[in-house]
Image (cartoon, rainbow, N blue to C red):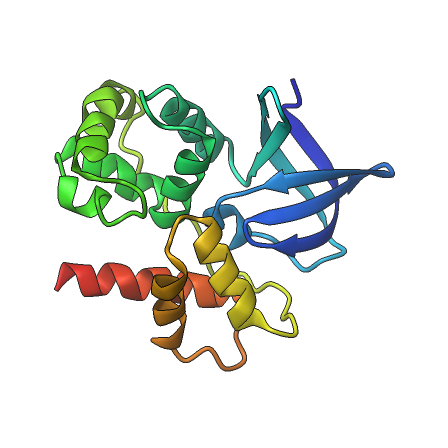
Length: 203
């Protein structure tokens, strides 16, 4: 099992990144909460990892914190939640907010995540309640202020990332068009689009 990797960040386009570890390139998928934490390409980083072995592929997932990886693994144990869905959940809601949803039986907030219907939200609350309550207050908020690298088409990268996370192409495009993306990195665009979507749903 590959539990942690430390190396140079070679390339990133959410939700994928390439990490060079002593000459070996590891292709990794990561939630947006981790992407917000990534330094510029060429920097050395350390990621907590989870290796998912399937018949047709070995998939490596990376996380900025051990707490994120723990939550990812707990989500995988929920009936009907696969790695892609777990990654989408972590990308769309911070760990502390997810814990509050479970504790408060907040089905409405969970169903705003792409691919999460009412039955899935109810199952998440039921099966995750003991794990969340046993994890303490879960009040840590992930810092999303770090800036990434501007690409030639950050809006396109952001749209592709949202589609990869489970949003429909038309919906992802509307989310991007609804914000002022001038001068922003793809990671910042995604963060603002997700925040705007959450705010609209609360109204």
